[in-house]
Length: 341
Image (tube, rainbow, N blue to C red; front, side, top):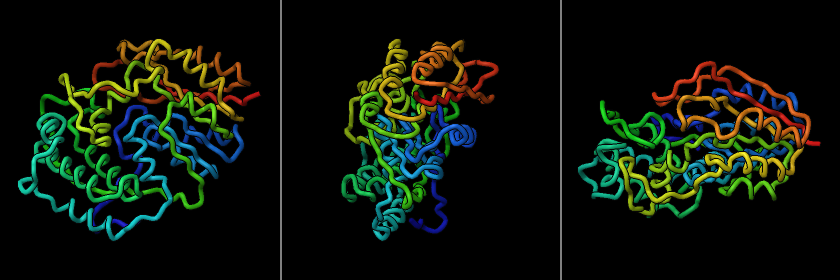
């Protein structure tokens, strides 16, 4: 898909996202391809989708899943190989690039998020574009997903946060104004891709694959709450917001971020119909920040995996996410690879 002149498109990794594995993807696949065989790859907690994007180079079929609506929209925009109406998209990209806030009507996004997560002008334009996408693009079409994913990426680029929406920065409010830019979809013409937004533990019971890549939440941070602004922008259901972070009523709360994490993880591993299981893990179990502490420790992960087959462990030093309140030295990322019996 081509883009308007001077509009450098967003790549799939150009989002701020906790646990984003883009910088680790080469290392992850060096190990997976060295110890696993097969043609079908299942990215069970796909997040931004960067691991699945890399998997396209190594596997004929890639299956993505995530329970966040904003991520699902991005998958449909980046991975769906259907052709889109480029004339329509070019006209919309040109239209959105020329918007002037003073000429636009008030909208929900401006009312709720101006002066906190975004500047007044940015929130005004973001809300207008979101309204227009809903009115002008056929729901769930390739054009709809492309424009909405482009809006998600463009909004995230100028959000007044440290990389998530648990809170906005109260001092030194960002002066960066919104600029609508398109995403750059992946070439998936030679791959078979399946996209889901389901509970992973339930989906695992029906998926048949060669390699299952597991990268679940590991601490008490609920992703649906950390990215609630982008979820609201995606759903566009105008929820009632509360609290200083302006959150909607809770939904999609993960058991992996609760005390039931070990039991939930064990259930998932037991039900996978797969030849190999690859699990990413970071060692913040002893973090000084309670919200950063892993709900499952490294030894427990290894023990659960060993019940399915021979398990190898790999590690690499890696700087963990830090919003300013978490201090953790000697951080490592781990990758477990299990050959299922």
